[in-house]
Image (tube, rainbow, N blue to C red):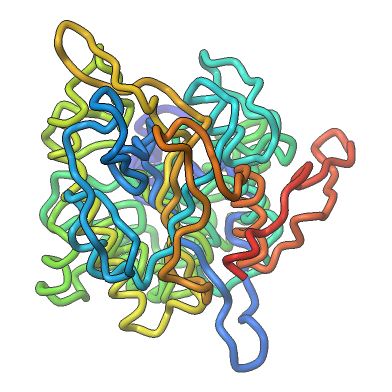
Length: 445
């Protein structure tokens, strides 16, 4: 079909940009399977993951070591929180004030060294023996892809929304059919609109109503082939339901939130993504992942704080206040709305950083380190106001209550109502364990 050819009365490229940007990028034939309401009189559980790609330093966030030698402890100091005996970084005062709503796990460790294989290890439960060069192809499905596959149907909205997407995300043995609905709004827009779901009245009129739009979907399908065709074809009419659904448009419409609340989250892409995440789980989305690789307008593009890249303390001065504001607002908002029993909030990356500072021409940093990492959780009906596990005095590895990423993922599955011991068949028909080992963290039950 030529570029100027039309689908209905809209040019094909414009049609794809108006509608398919939001759901053809999913690669998810199952994306619009709908989740039945949770048990009688109850709400379905949900999860919001704020993903700190690059590996945030546990030594500058939730597991500080003020008594360690200078080469380890860094420049920041710990501060007391609302929970006696629990301290966090001085750059996180808002989170410190609501520590009774937090559970911090300090004793998770793994042996994967790089970003790709660490992400694979942390989010699949299988060793991250994957190639660190493109294309990044996971051998096993991420927990999020598995959730999108095994969660029952929900009503009117995708089960998994990613803002915008996770680095190295993939379905592994489940195939590419269980990816997220990706939201990639302009990070510099003060209104933070979501163009992927905007199909305004003029566009709908130009498509001549539902029947013409369905014909357009069929025409777009014929222009595709292979995996894209299969993913698109299976649930294209459900995709149309979402694209034209008032409930979906309302859920993604941040303009419905009062200015004071939007200000509380922070008028930046991270704060507004977190606010949108709350709106989405309140509307029925089961899983929202918020990518927080950087602060807009700053040079740092991830939490990958090598000394050879930038000064870790200068960058933490920029990032930590944004994290503190957005996540504390999200946690407080979820609790204020009575969503904390159903909604679990997770803040983490794929690894920690080396406890001993590195140096590059006088510039301090920390290198890759999977052997010790901290994870913040809130809500989910779990016991809060606690620290689980500890690391050695220099933060090098777990000391008390050593845990694996599998235990964390098993905790997520339990919260979402997925049996972490189940076996599924991959795209070749082989039986695969969802998790090869691991149990939900007892302190969070």
